[in-house]
Amino acid sequence: MTGNDSTARVVVGIDGSPSSQAALRWAVQQASLMGATVDVVGAWEATPLFAGPTVVDPTLEAETARRRFDQEIAGALGDDRPVEVRERLVRGNAADVLLEAATGADLLVVGSRGHGTFARALLGSVSTRCAMHASCPVVIVRPPS
Image (tube, rainbow, N blue to C red; front, side, top):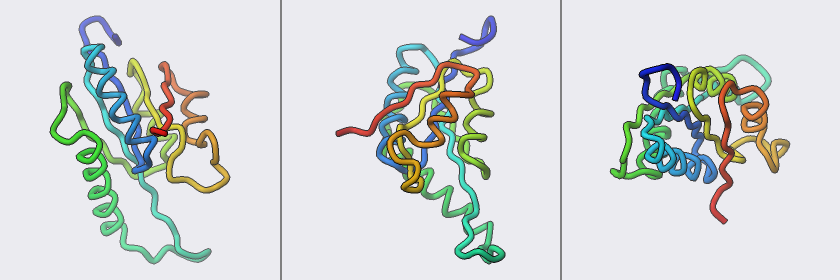
């Protein structure tokens, strides 16, 4: 537990991938055992469609990211929430957002692979960065086989 009288906190990063859905379910189960709350964190970045200036409405991108974020949480957990689940969607680099969110947490949970590029194959770059730089223990969850 962090602090003297504070509740334990588990941070979990999600991105819509099968491994992040497994990570979310695992985090909720672990938090239940720890008597912890779960902070579900998602990150999104504006993605240019070509090598020029981005011509995408950031408000529309934010709404799309929010809808996907909410759908993923509902799909992975349904109404089964044995612990307090707090949701946070942030615009920014996923690894940076998760590392900041995990400051002061008791545990950071991430999936082994996300919706990244082919170059991030076996162990994703976000999970690798989190494992190397988090200020708390990190659990990397593989997708169901």
